[in-house]
Image (tube, rainbow, N blue to C red; front, side):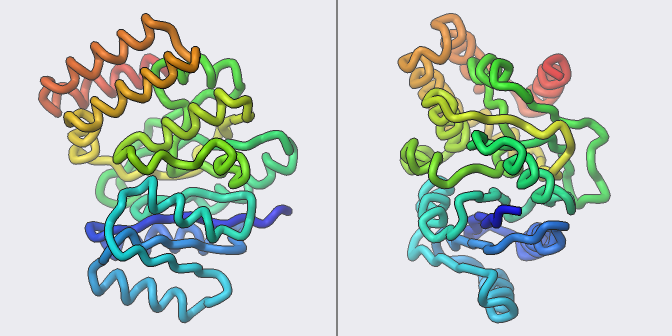
Length: 276
């Protein structure tokens, strides 16, 4: 089977216990990675530095550590990490999520079956404090290209932490936009699909995604809403969505800005459920 690299970024607020769980879930994959790239996006706390140092010393051939002098944001950090990934297949992983044991084996197998793939995600479940508190609800995503393109008109049809993609395809589309502090994945993946690259999702749960009220609050803050409208404008200019789709998102972002988080959470859950 084809070898793959894992790409993760950590920053000052990353918790060491969450980080350990995330790394452990990758090290226990039924098909282990050939390389694990960890990008330190600016100065990090001592306990996390010590943990990363121990990982590197324990397995020098597996871990590649990239240290950035200052915090530049996720997009910039991932671009820097991509530069040192030695394999074309790259599995994304966040420092506070949990990959199920067969996640990467399943994804690599899909790439073996379809060499035209450039983007591959999968289903996820949310959890709040720890993986014993996993939601029963499965977050599903479209499988075929027609449904992926249709979904992109109003939302991202991929879960970023569960993605495995082709490095060459990502770089050919310019990589992540480092000017964006949010929704960098949405922007990148929409460009890749617009440029003719093939994507899909595995119809199995591959990853447990950590979610809380802080995540929802970030999704509805001014910067996030502004960026979301900007991405929709880019898609409109490329011809990947209609003017009606653009206005729909613009109004949705305007409403979400003034909506209290508890109400926003309930409406978000209803919308996601209706889309399943």
